[in-house]
Length: 211
Image (tube, rainbow, N blue to C red; front, side, top):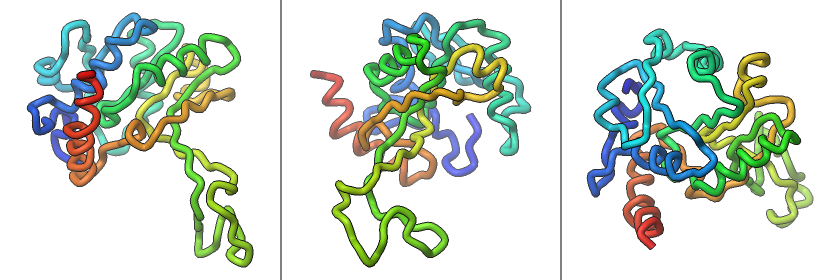
């Protein structure tokens, strides 16, 4: 319920009146592979925004601090709610698809992977510290021929109980990359991000869900 860059963003409403948090709640409760859905929050005011089927679990207020250890927070949740596999989904990534979440759950359930995370593939000219990172300016390739790079969307993580309880983190040693498109990779940090998400929601996402 606190945010420095975009105050109140998790409950901020799109133009049709839908609170941001309802998007990810709807997605999670519509997955047949998820048994229970929780909102983990220190402020009980969030209860006013819970859809039927979503449970509330009070989070220690110490995790509201900007310097809080988020891995410690995820571990604290796992100590209160026992599960074989955890799906960590953020309200600020409203356009996650059920199919992507279930693809990640299936990968982790198979035992081949111990975790999964949503990523966006990029094949662009990347620079770092004043130098081209992934190509030579003297021999410019087609972007489609560049070796793909993958960026975490930070919106979705799936991990086993062992990963969070033993490694104390949300990404294990054998992660599966859930590649998502530009819309699904949307992550809201700043006010302009919300404006873009609102346009996507009103013009694309909402209409897609009505089909």
